Amino acid sequence: MPYAIMRFEKRKGGPASAIEKHHERKKEQYTSNPDVDTDRSHLNYHLIQPQHKYYAEIQSRIERAQQENPKCKVRKDSVKFIDTIVTATPEYLEHLSPEQVRRYFERALDFFKAEVGETNIFSAVVHMDERNPHMHLCFVPLTKDNRLSAKEVIGGRDKLVEWQDKFHDHMAAEFPELERGQSAAVTRRKHIPTWLYKQSHRLTNEMMQIRTALEQTNPLNAKRQREKILKLLEQWYPQVNAFEAKLKPYDDQIKILRQNEQVYRLETEEAKRAKAWEQQEKLSLIYELRECQKFIDSIPSDLLEQLQENYENQLEHGQHFRS
Image (tube, rainbow, N blue to C red; front, side, top):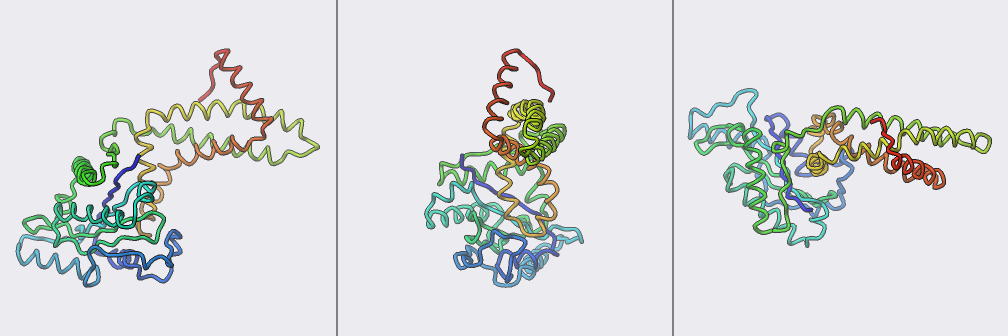
């Protein structure tokens, strides 16, 4: 199912230069982001091109707002600009023509012009030199009465849900194939519990032990190792199946994690560092289950057939498994 993807990142003034180098492709190398193919960077294009450096663009808008509204205050911890990523499900964009892809981002830009004010947007650049086309759009969060307030413009959890609803409705009016994913804010009553992460890690550790036992098998110990491995697998295999079933109630959350995976990968180096641990924790469920399933596929066919036969026999006799 194709989704329109939009994500905000609140920024203070400090990171402006580093973000500019990434967005505007002013770096010679992108070793921390191997997805960037500089041979294709000439395909990137601006829908709004900054006339000055990012920091100057930000300051000029804030100073103009202060002239028009003396109550416009800037604190040391004020959010000075919003770094926005706009993209869509990779498979969806792959099937669009270059003209349609451009129109997709133009449509998104129209949305932001209406919502945050065209004069507050200082850069909108589309990157075509990475795996999935995406747009970086930066704007200063100024209210209609010229106050600097990311809290009022972007808002909290509930307003972010409104943002996503309005963005989807706007994009789907021209791209009707797009679906509205369920927001994590809406489904927060079903947050993925910590014990599922712990169980995922335990299954992965057990898988590594079985894999090591398989690697240590040789003609001299084959019979003894086969019995040992089969015994370990008979304990582990049912737990993987049960674990997969326990993830079913959290399908919406896992879809959101998969959707966000693309967005996190597109973020700048600084944002990646800030989110790395949190993202690794959340995505571990997906990756670890996938690794377990790949490992099952790699088990020697004769051993796997016997394992599945034993498992089915146990199910027929109503045997319960530890989870």
